Image (cartoon, rainbow, N blue to C red; front, side, top):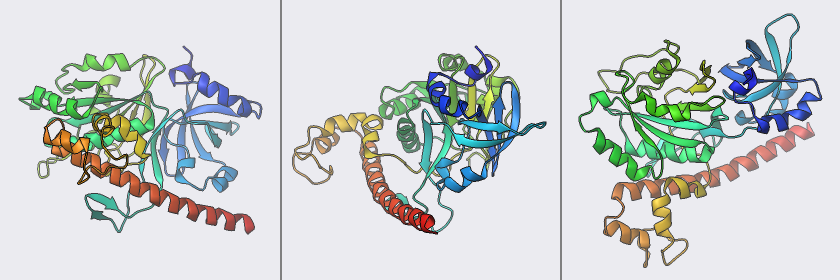
Length: 359
């Protein structure tokens, strides 16, 4: 396996590279991003890069810019370790969320309102997404549900990791709770600090594959990364004794190469897990409820007061919990609102680009 294949290069990228190859551009993978500066990995060396002026002029959305895990094409600046990025190659997939709100945020029916209706790409070209939750004060079943929806939307394989089993007396209970919402998704209960069941990750850590660790701060993402790499690569901090929540350690995503030939993307703790995607993604993350909903009398049933509602009947029969049903309704409402906001944003961008062309 050559250096490119170790980094995840395959026939998908080879096919899309041909047009760039004819122009004399070289492919590299984005390792880190800090502001407008990127670190690339190319044939065993790291290069510092910035995007070309023409690239910046035409990239009018944040998602158009390179992110960690992207394959980009570049020109080497002679006699230096610097490069100029000319394009982002098509992504096999990517993990995205709604762009976080910087100000003016408010809650409406349990949904965060406000902010820019634009997607934020966290990482790209992923094979397995590990959703990490700690079996301590951080555990939040509804948060795991939201991560599952986002991972399914990304197109990668979700796996739930329940870390810190050494701090929990009833691990099996937590596993069963997660199994109720993570339909057909592997659930791995581990303790990275005590090296308990770490071998359960091995089937996903294969040469040429890329894994990403997702979750809030303090769940152990960086600690797991350190353990896999065998070194203190990522900084880690203790849990705040005042709040019981993890302090931010990883401040930006980073791609790291394991000696055996797979790559790891560690990500910052995500405070806001705002959904991005189409409503149909819930057919995977809420497969249990969506299947029941097929039996509703009305196709557009809101599962509230409509007669002949199979979902409401399933709740009354205790086949699904009230918390699960409420979470499902909230995610539907959030995605429906998002769809309307995206249409508004698209109209705004269309007017903006039209004005730009006329200038």
